[in-house]
Amino acid sequence: MKLKSHKTGIFLVLLAFSLLLLPVTLPAAVDETAYIVENLKVSDIPYDDGSGLVISWKPLPKERRIIEYRIYRGITPDSLFYIGKIDVNVKTGVPGDEMYFYDTAFNYFMDVQSFGKLRKEKKQSKDSPLYRRYPRDANITGPQLQHYDILGVISEKDYYYKNRRIEVVAEEDTTIYAGLKVRNFDQLAKKLLPDHEYYYTILAVNEARKYFPHCELAIGIPRKNAPEKTEEFYAVWVEDLNRLQFEWSLPTFTDDHYYHSVYMLKRSDLEKFNRYLENLEAIEENNLAVKIDSTVTTLELSLKNPAQLIYSRYSGYPYTPSKTVSINVIDGRIKSPKIYKNLFNGEEVDVDIEFNSDNLDDYLFVFQLYDADRYENYSDPVAIEIINSDILPEIPAFEIVDRENDKGDYNTAKWGKPVVFLTNSSYLNEDKTKLLVNYEINSNKNYKVRNIYFRVFDKEYIEIDYINEYFTDNKFKVDIPAGIDELNFEITFKCNNPVGDYILKQKLLFDEISQSLSPGKIFLGNENLKEFDYYVYKRNYSDEEFRLSKK
Image (cartoon, rainbow, N blue to C red):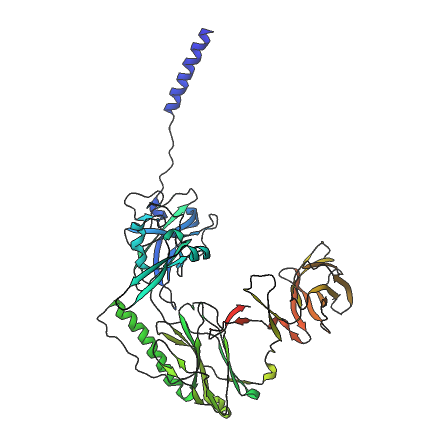
């Protein structure tokens, strides 16, 4: 036994020694420079209020196995804080040649759960300028506040019960504020300030969660711009009503719009109007040049707008305003119901303009957007279309009632009769003889739907099935002949109040792409209901304009 133990010990020693002599293969060192983001650019977002920048860069090849790009921003090049990231599918990478990150509007700054102390970003060297989010340290975060527009998010309860009276005494007056401690804010949000410099950089993270070196810093300066031109603007003359009607769409960015206005232009003044627009563009370019170089001579508006104001109103921000207006022409004149005042340039216009309905070809109309920085932009001039009121959509009778069982802070708008429309269908067997049909219901308390009746016909209008949907679960099954490519539905109702002769019709048509029966247009008589949208607007007694409440 002793001999065997001695031999085993010698064997283990020899084995360990032989393992030490084996060559060890170390993983190849990663070339970190191949993981540094390239072509970082920071550009101003056009048509905004001067609070937006767009960051772009070239994505790394998918062979780098990147899972995210992290974005950092700072007001100095030696301290940049994490502000967001873009995730990447590690298998597919990024298909395009450029990636974008939009630093615009109010976004997260800090809250009560933020770090108490300044923390370096993960896996960074001591001299790295990258840090994690802003900490709850007044010495660090406090100096940052003057470089951002700050928005405090407060719970309603804290706002009313935890504020303190703060008096700020000036030479002529004393201003009283409701003060709150920082800990009472649920969150602080921030927005960039116009004409301030901001530094940006980006680093890539691979699937092993390795943080690679950040790229070279880029500088961005947000600038105030004129509003984006309205692309859709329509002018109509309702001949039998002696009425001008206008409709328009709004651009993507509307935060700094202050006035929406309609101008009338004589066709003979079109060339003068185009020169006026060129003058506006030159002034905007000059304003930017002066900010970059103070020695540049300031350009003043030298031309008068040949178009005449016929309607103006406040934009309604932050709410969505109405996008249509009607102007009655009385005794051949357009008159405003009030004096239109521009709070920025001091202009006051009492509209009283001659309008000759016998020479409509002489007139063009433009829609103006005017922002809080006195920039203005106009739609393309449009000619007027002549119609009669019988082709206008009829506004249904509606009523406004108090909503039941609430706290007294809601009303209910009710109009029309119920509408049921088919939304989708799918086959339930391989022979395609059993069909599941989905539908949706629009109704109100005046017409509570109890039963929905579906009469189903084939292409030749031979009845296939009759379905009484007494339990309205938004779906029903129907048996159909094999190989059918069109179904016709007649939809009727049983409600708590009679609906009269009210039949909706809709088709399901075979779609080659989805290989299923897809819903077509829905008709009430000869009216295609999909051509109509309903917009509910409201205003308080003190508001001048209506704002969108429901679409």
